[in-house]
Length: 161
Image (tube, rainbow, N blue to C red; front, side, top):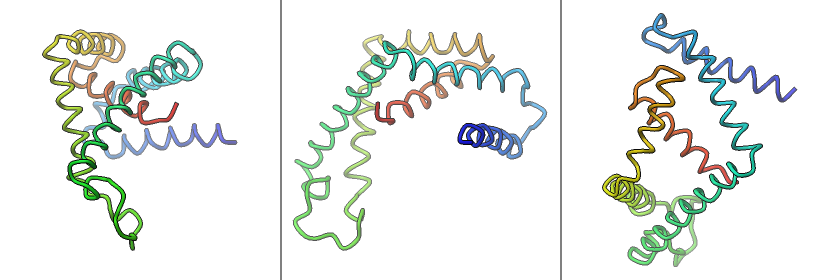
């Protein structure tokens, strides 16, 4: 029953995306099943192949360590405004979260690391590889392919392995 519910959810999301599209005729009937197939292939790879799972889990640990270090630094600099323990009882759960001092520093640090990886010429071959693979399989350009791949990998890294 859960498998059927999941399949219906996928179909419903695809239909909603198609219904909200500005140009419904531009939807390629070749790209939709190819994209779904690649998604299922990536999911199977990450869930069933231990070396792939271990590689992504180690990348997840690196990202988590960077995020924890950033949170510790902002808590040190800004005190409870940056995420350190409150010196008083909170009246509203979650009310102590301040976007500018707790979430945006992580975005800044990741942006700096991305810039460094580009400068050190580590990231461009990875970007070209994703762009090439997605252009060959789905027929999308490099920018679309990269942003899609980055969103998929970011979502995977947020999932606890």
